[in-house]
Length: 241
Image (cartoon, rainbow, N blue to C red; front, side, top):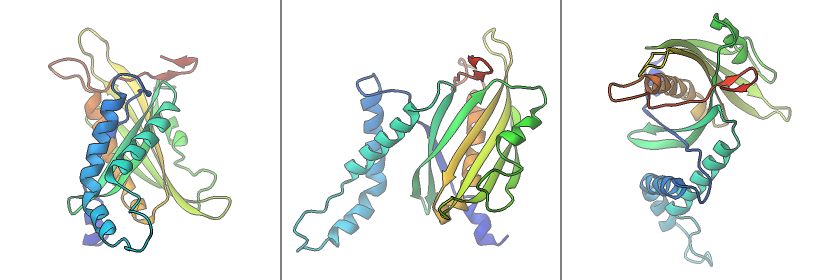
């Protein structure tokens, strides 16, 4: 791998969780405004350049504002998060090139599941390590180690029934969450999935999701000040736990 390609896999990512709130519920407006502020900061310079080039004889004012970009992104993420089951959460990421966000928001569905078996090898089938319908070629499998468990991520180039190209990224972790405050040690399987349609992002998504896997493991560890920062509801065979 060339130095340039290696550098691409080391680009910084930022990952955040989409809250499970609906309009009129506490926290909805505050979170939306935080996303608006963030995207205003990220897009102001580029939008100013496009606005300056907007033809004077266009007959209408430049139709896009940073406020609109942020509100649309927040609404889209909240809608996707609201459609998930209780044991799943939506993470969104941004990848930075030269200290500026290049792709955002990148959504990843994260499911927390009670292990079906002590041996986690069955997770290889869950993430399609041997291939899935639609895969255009054999998947690339990489193993991931975290402080509280092992995992795997799978990347595959795919083709839709209409012939359009895209990529899938599936990943899994078996985490052993340490005991805290009288609570016993808990094992959980974490499944991550996303689809990528932009060629440039395809080369970065593997490293980005691995960073998210490390963040999840870190947030599942109890702290000296209290319980883990990331609480979760796990799916079981009969429903949620």
